[in-house]
Length: 488
Image (cartoon, rainbow, N blue to C red):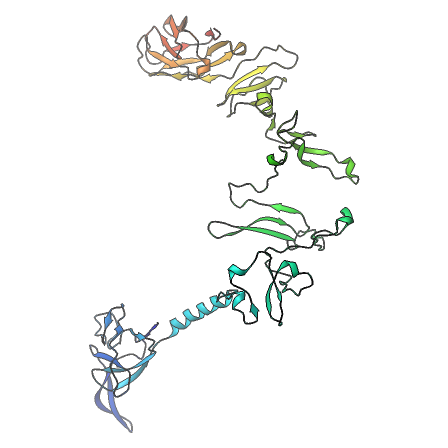
């Protein structure tokens, strides 16, 4: 049901006759606009009944309205907007019980809304949800009587009905349009296998080559997201080249699996391969190949047969005989292990002398072990320095106080300076070694020099460092050369 609105327009005022006036040869009365006059509506010009089911301009039920006396912000005598009863498009209005005049409703808003609804309805492919069974020239049984694989075609009598697959050969079928159609559950006639690889294919699409790649896609696959978006996830472009994209940021666009476990899997050979494409198929070269987890010597390996370049890292190895993979990161411009950057356990780098360094503990810059290169010793080199944590009242000096491992991890070493920022009592903790691997197995005691002389210096097994002398602000302690054994 629809209510239509009237009033509020340039001609909707209450007007009464005033004094008699003569203009030239014409005599008449002044028109006087008045406000505060009650206006009622009727279904007939002279008799009929009053419409009492009205709504005022703010949607409240009323039986009449008052023309404006200007206190509501409207012009004097303006008849406010009023909604007629359902489906009434015009009524006879009477002001103050005077003669009735015809007041048609304003149908503009409803006309626009109707036009919008009509356009939406026209845009729907099947706005009335008409099914095949609703068509006058189609006779199909209810869903319970239909079978998977039934086809729609001409049946006895000339109408359309369901044709079972067993009699589809030679029947006249209702074919979908060749372009822009939806094909569900259709079965293609297979090509003759006797023709071999040079025979007719199951599906063949041919179109001119496009150097600018602006041909329509030959084939597209779409996925619908949880929010109703249509996402193109797979396609062959206008030149027949395969493309793919994931439907969500956390999904994989393409997977190639090894052989099914319940079909004599997993794969015992190479199940994925990128290769060259020479004229003679026998001359193909595998550039990158993935081996199945059932392979006798390379289970789960991915193998490249040519040099890989311009990579941030190359992953090598796997879980063969319990081994873990390593990642080759590249070569440094200087000697020694990395001293900056964040590294992961298993990262491997070469220094400028050819020494190979392995990150054994992740961190910034991590803990490194090495076998020396360039004809040098096979003894593992020192790890990178890691800052110690100054205690209360202490700070790093011009050279940060730090520890590292030496002799292949059998010894620890201190370097650098600590400087007091205020008074520090004798025996107080002046620093802590944060890296557990750098801490001594047992307590270490030695003599270390500070601004006031030399005194007893202790490193506990928990990494805390104490000094048996008091500091005042500005005094420093020098830690270079302090070493300790880490082996039992």
